[in-house]
Length: 67
Image (tube, rainbow, N blue to C red; front, side, top):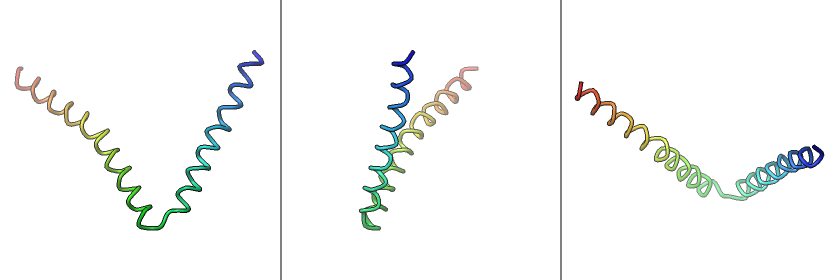
């Protein structure tokens, strides 16, 4: 039980450290670089969420045509 408690306590600090490192990295970026990074992230989110949604709608239309 003690090992489990120490393992769970270490994980949030590791995540917190990664989060703090990311914040420091963002603070060092210029406005243009920050905008480009945000644009890249938004494009990835659109692709990650948009393609499965498009396939779902396409599959729904195909099933609807069969009925």
